Length: 231
Image (tube, rainbow, N blue to C red; front, side, top):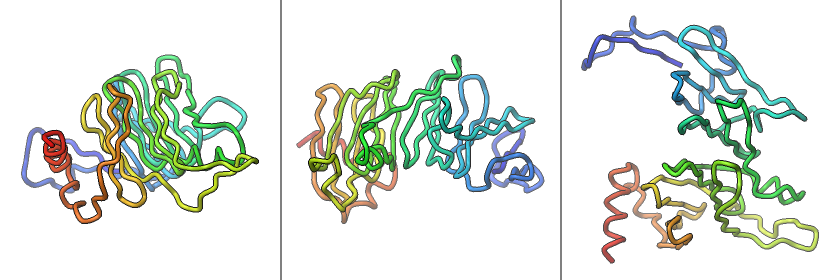
């Protein structure tokens, strides 16, 4: 992790203005998966071995504590901030962290074993301006509200009599936030779908295997969305 301080905008950054933070400095791990700043000014750093809070001077480390309220996993995929909450996810699930109440809210698609290990394996997620989050998992796509309640679900599997998922193929891949109502979703085959919360709809557009370059930036995504909405 690097931190930089400079008096204004510049075209060249002098290396002496950087401070290098590692496990020696107190980070829980050197593999950083996400960085965000909350409304109180703290910097939160997700890693493959725990979550870190940095106040500009000291680093506080948080780890999973099995059997007690806390992180859903130590190996985190990302961290995002929205109002007084943090949102983080991993291949073991997702959760809201209420910073004002120091409360962890698990976002669980299913608690039924053995299917739950796949249903709750989150590969990507987006937080909306409406304080909801949309996640893409091994078995489908789902939206949760700020209390942890599922408000939309799309399952892409068939369970057998024992609850096992009858599929050897992963479904979810990645999501892109378009606006407060729309989420762009890619499955593992690069098929693109649009989720519209106003209509509670999740519609497949088409396969964009040959158009990924146009989706490499938010601007490119918005241009494609504009052309879709005209048709």
